[in-house]
Image (tube, rainbow, N blue to C red; front, side, top):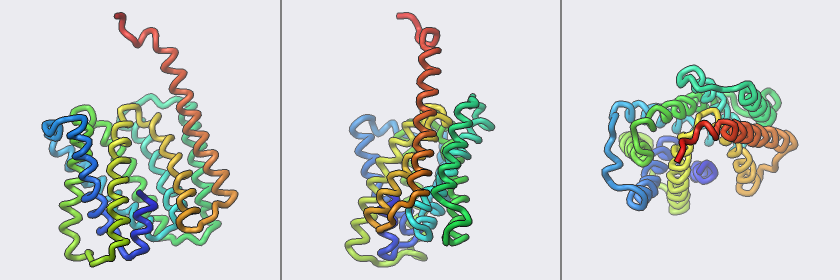
Length: 276
């Protein structure tokens, strides 16, 4: 999604337009999911105000993230945005009272070191405004991740994603008279594909948050590997040694966290599984 929307921005689309089209074209994916696996009744919100809060926070974070994609190279924008899982782990500890062990804290720190190596703060020509926007967007994304954990206690995954898409269409539609412009077929094709990819990704991401945030979040780091590959193939941004080393540390932190969680579940298995 990020690569496609980055290409769309190079065709002249701005951040409010990207929010609108991403929401609009992700909606068919959500409806297909609902009709295939659920029913329309699953879209009924049990806590409407919680959806409003999630949508406000999510749209703000999305807009800032898209603006960072416009201002920064794809790999750098993604790397800076990956302070979000770190903030999410901290929020899960402070707000959700999840048990985050020493090993998982160490994995988060390792991932953050990898992000710093990739981003090379002070050692690159990245615009300060772009970095600041990406960081604020990352904090918002961490808040979204924590909010989703609360929502999933009472809301269906399809309902969460559906109403967020509707909110993006409504808010983006209100902004279109001020920011919208006519674009060519290439730009339209890119935002259609980006919206579809975003819908699929959001459904899977929301579903994954049934596990503790501190377990799921490190896996988000693997997206930076994909961003580096897309940047190489689509934007001719050849990955440097910093990028390769940082990506290895980031992936390692996620894999290590998964192994720790798997071992913990094995130890608790005999007492956690009820007798047949």
